[in-house]
Image 1: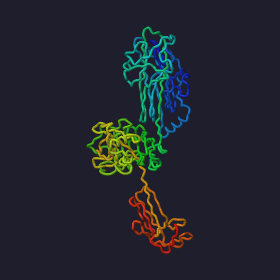
Image 2: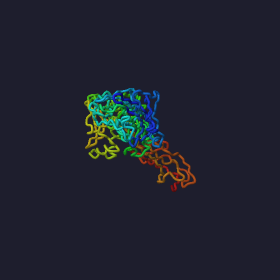
Image 3: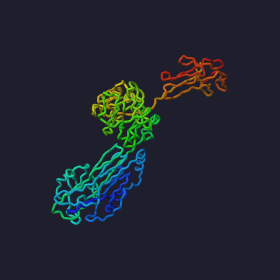
Image 4: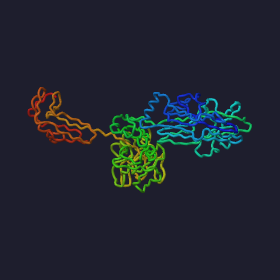
Length: 592
């Protein structure tokens, strides 16, 4: 409750309201110390707030000249009773995240402030919001009443102090009052003051979506009042309610995993093309959307934003290793964000820049994108490492998991239609521009995405997107800052087959087959070696073939002779071979 006494005082006390209790029962409960625990629950306030984690503080005081209220009483925000939706959300949030949110009002809540007439009187408190693993938050202010938000005299109910309407403190009219939220140390005389809204229509003081690991925000909340000389003396009261609502970070998962680092080729292989989801990077808790594209591989559908500040905020070293990063060996130290650090005259500069835009992501020089492996020693071919999460890689310029294959398969041709396709859902390649010459250039005009392939000592290959065209094999200076998408490839499977038959055309398979049998192998390898079957004498009885068949050697469909026990290597150009026995002596074939 906010109590104002003409020429006497303005006093504010702190009150926490348990989420599972009614407000009406707690308005008279006064506390000196505001102590709020982190709350993860679901609360709806008059249909206005329906999010995860709501904490309310009533700014209140009911005693005026000589305070006489408890000095050790504390109220705590309480967790809302479980519900099916609540449990489902918490299960998602608790995997890899520890969401907390807290709000406090600083200062001596029991001090007295005198209010003089014909001048504006102020009372300011710092409001602090802290938290971690929070996706978004909103701070609201309102009256605790659905009908009354004016300052009302204790006994003369017909005399009210009316709400301000955007006037500055210096220009506040007589017998008006209001509140203002401003930055720390901002001149409270020059900020605009507004009347307190009703409980059913709270006003948003702060609201933000964030990808930061931690929240630590402090603002100043000021109440201003101006009395005329003819205003009745006494106490003027109203109730002020601050409510903080937050949404914890959570991921939907993908193929029964939640972390980027849990992705493998087998995981990707297990889901159908078109499967989408969200995964978080264990290094900095950033969340990325992913999809299994039509090329059969799993791609990030949002840009990487790994940066030193995010790593440190998540208690992760800026030194990246193979434990959670696509590093073939050794380690790599991610540099600090610096838009001035890119230098196209230095092909091997290790630099990155993140402007805080989660859609555009961060910008990396090619050496930084390849975790230092794209140095002066690599002038051609693929870099062995990258700053992608473990289990993910930068795409190559061609072949499996490349932009070339992806654009071809989805039909994103080098045309305006192709550009529109790859920039649209579900691919969502954004025109994030590039960093060089100490500035961000071509934002909204082009998109440039590094591959892991070096073109020369000075250049590397990248995907280039502009409105009228798409080029998945473009080249540019390694020292420029481009964005990154990572991919997990599902190896192509190849089938190799070796078949045996008698010289007269009968196959060696039936109810009573003559060994060896046909063999078929499916593998991701580009070649496979078989052992040629057969023995000098095979005895068969009781079937359509009766007696013995001496198999000395086989004639291959490739024209070569193969002895039993020798080897045949099949590959992509010759994935199958048929072996026919050259010996028919004593073989008595029947119906196969």
